[in-house]
Image (cartoon, rainbow, N blue to C red; front, side, top):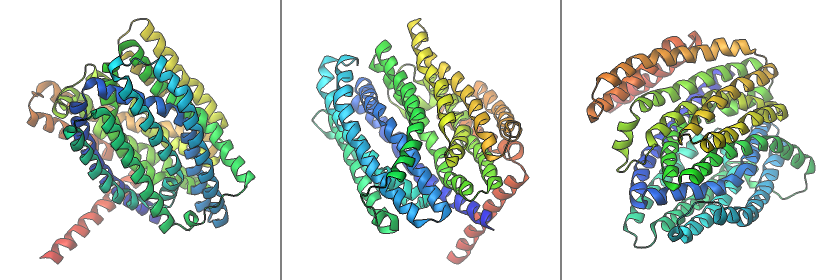
Amino acid sequence: MASVSSNNLIAKNTLLLYARMLLLLGVSLYTSRIVLSTLGVEDYGLYDVVGGVVSMFTFISMAMGNSTNRYITYALGKGDKDELNDVVSAACVIHWVIAILILVLAETLGLWFLHHKMVIPDNRLIAAEWVYQFSIIACMVTIISVPYNAMIISHEKMGAFAAISILDAVLKLLIAYLIQITGHDKLIIYAALILSVNVMNRLIYQLYCKHTFEEARSIKIKKNYPQFREMTSFAGWSMIGNLVYLGYTQGVNILLNMFFGPAVNAARGVAFQVQGAMNGFVTNFQTAINPQIIKSYATRDFKRQTQLVFSGSKFSFFLMLCMVLPVFLEAEGILHLWLKDVPDYSAVFLRLVLLISLVSPLENPIGISNNATGDIKKYQIVAGCFNVLIIFFSYIVLKMGFEPYSVFFVQLIITTIVLFVKILIVSPKIGFTFRDYVSKVLFRVLIVTVSSAIVPSILHFVAPTESLIFLIINCMVGVCSVSFFAFFLGMNTIERSFILKRIKRVIGRYSVVNKSNQ
């Protein structure tokens, strides 16, 4: 009964988060089109790369965020209120310290890098400096918000995210309108307005948590050295992975800037904008399932945890494939439909980034399971050593004169290798074998990927994709093809039964509503 209740909660939270994501996706795609058109390719690329310099310093916060999520969820799983209060209080103090530390690093090392290493046109240097300062403040605001966001996720109150996103979406639309009518520097105004939205969101999340969760009302600054030490130790090892991730994502972005200039950064920005929107759908599902993975480990229900990891990995992959397949095939048509001026390399960047993104849905449940154990040293060191090779080989291929997209081939190969390494490390900790994961997850997603790509690929080469109608038809066929083969080839009997029950329940509620309205 507990498993059924948990599954229903996951399904409910997933639907709430999807409603949130659909709203944000529509706004994001529309505003990106307006922002790129209004700012121009050069300023858009400048915003992307300058903001990326600031985000390089957030590896500390990202590591601490992983630690905060893990310890809050673990304490909730155990039902220990005292431990929960200690964790939340310690997390708030630590994140304020991190915010101040990042401010110091950004205003010294980061500012030096901006002026001496970045390729910025002389007439846009002042604008870049304003964007940089606004990005620093936005980064600090995001950091001190982490404990409050972690409380919402750990308590599985996903409706809060959906509700607050309505306001966020309206404000983003307003920003897109304001930068079109302003007579001042549009890039500076855009960065300032984005900062104001971040500040408002932070205040709303904090007020919600203090009103809803007891531990948020009892935050105290106290000397709890054992809790500080345990959380920072976890974060310290987690920091390796986050530092490497930021190193190869923003590092590659900076390499592209150094070798090719801001125009190529704009193409990368467009590709990652689409990838980010797609990742949001999968992240929503995984955000709903992650607390259950950790709570299962806290109660030592390893069978339940393994089931969540296997099903979560497959469902996440299928959700991503539903979007990746049609966009991969129709990249040029979609970009031209979305944007007025498509930067060079955008389509090839997008295709390669989408292939890379198919690995992430499989990695995340494995990583969350490893975090649940609290023993992350080996996992972070080994995976980090492999991932750092991305920036190393990217520099080599660019130095040898290869095209800009070569860096994404490098990332795809190494990311795939790292997935297998992570499975080998984590599987013994929670009671499944590498062979189990390969046969029950990887084999099924491979079969679904190959099978579902056949018909959409044939249609892509036969149909005139320059037509909007055929473009929409091709995308719909891709989604339907993935859904069909995922259901019949990708899922086991239990998973198919759960999906059918949820569909029947939704249809039943719809029928009741219709009868009551008649």
